[in-house]
Length: 157
Image 1: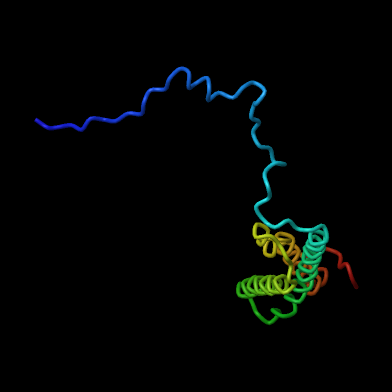
Image 2 (image 1 turned 180 degrees about the vertical axis):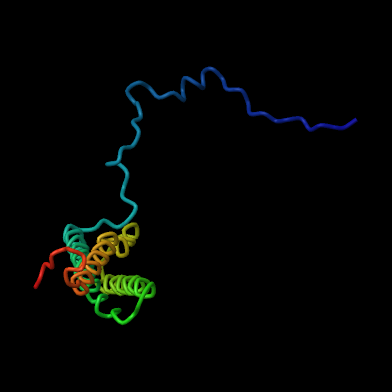
């Protein structure tokens, strides 16, 4: 037969011990609130917060301007390329311009908290892409418009 070790269990509590461990009604403990918990990271001053908002706003409008300029420039830069290659060259140009804008954003020396570092990349990315494509399509259409072959009136004589 196998020998089993005797299990040691904690001592059973005495009924009088329970009365001692319970807090009295006037000593009720309240859970800590958000105000009681100290912040874990450094607290940004009002000046730093307003400066960061200003710099992010500046980055937004910089990317909007870059998208409009680069989209229009793509019409003239890739005019000599024919067919499908023109489209892919323009998309590659758009990605390069966006990467340049990320480099410019990093050069702005924004003091963002670690949780907001992705704002350098994500700020105005959708606007950048759509405005680039919009300005590229509109400028290409205006430059390459031909006579009345299609039956549509020419906007500029």
